[in-house]
Length: 207
Image 1 (cartoon, rainbow, N blue to C red):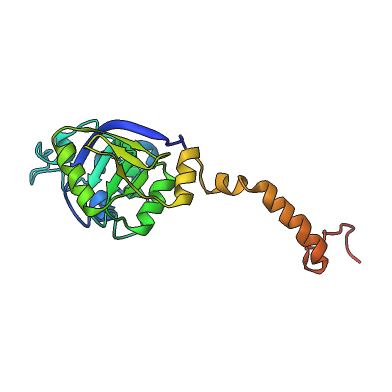
Image 2: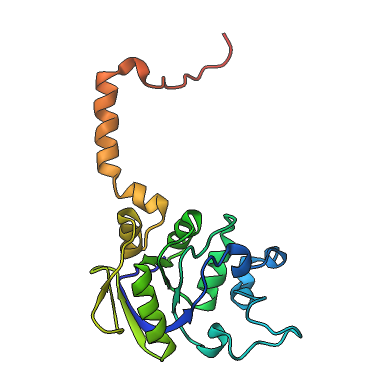
């Protein structure tokens, strides 16, 4: 993944609460190979009118090119489908700002390089109003600040997730960053508990 340090980009307001993963990507589209892209299916049914045409007044359609999404509480609730994050990332979003997130959704977002930035509800309303009026936002992960809508706003993110995003790491990379400590523990443990170590396999055929 690419490191996420600071992003200055157009933002899109989505003044909805409890946007669930089935709304983010309806299940009927999830058989498509990821290589073909999931962006066209993001919020598919909400973005379209009854006849299937895009609704020009829906926020995602009215703010093309946005890379930051601002929503209300409990964003990404519902099932654990990682495809919901694929749809966001493939559409072009690198950050979602909301007062709260579904836990599994937020973890999936980080593993795909998308920052789930948590703000207070009043701050979310301030941001929704600002980006609705066309404001561009700067999301600074190093400082944990959002700028562009008046005074800088602080956001929170799990410290481990912050480390992963700043470095562009997945879970394997995070584990490897502790390789020296893991090796030192293994050496000390082998000396302290030799009886607990796996024996080396012996060759030599049958007895």
